[in-house]
Image (cartoon, rainbow, N blue to C red; front, side, top):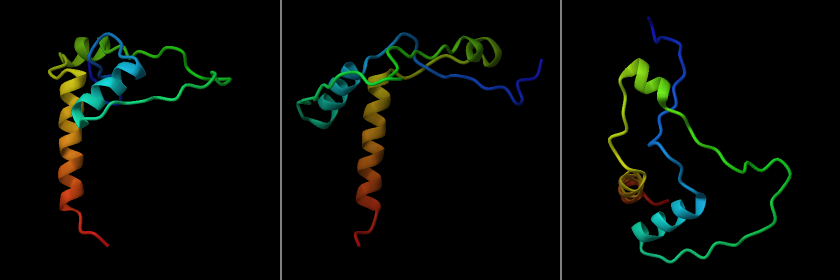
Length: 88
């Protein structure tokens, strides 16, 4: 069976709330987040969670990095990209 042209979700399994993500990011960059809450808007997504079962089945894929480790790597990459960019 071919996987060419197929679309796959890649996700760590389980859900991470926006507040959890914000807390993790705050720990990584060394700040205490202070989120502002507002009433929900029409059309807001209440819950969204990727299912990576097809990637596991067809590609033998499994997550190798936690969400927090991925955030840490991304922040380090951003910091490096910011230092490398010439200031104008």
